[in-house]
Image 1 (cartoon, rainbow, N blue to C red):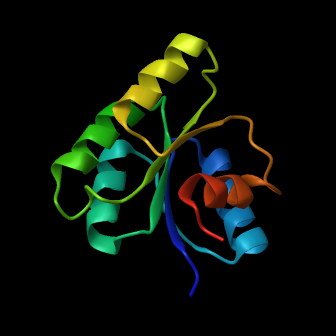
Image 2 (tube, one colour):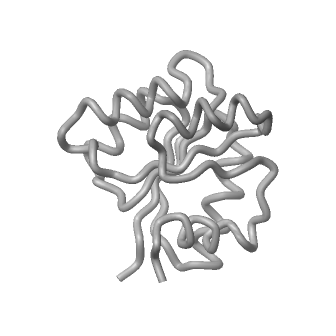
Length: 124
């Protein structure tokens, strides 16, 4: 059975490249959302196996979106991986303290993105 991944990112090109990568390389089903609010709604409706969440978004940013997902019993248990261009140690510690499964960095390699996600989640 293919994994179902929700990508929440305000940048169209990032969403498209990540989706194409996960569909082509891993054969996963991909759902997309262009904002934190839309992502929270989609996660609640679609119950993905994991969420790839951008940190920097207008309106509801990644950490705020993550907290909203954790408040809802329907989405609280879905593993979340943050996708960020912020590579400073202090930012990484702050994101890790949120309780996310992993932090992945932009720019990412489309050929290895699914392997990074699988490794972080213990999927074989």
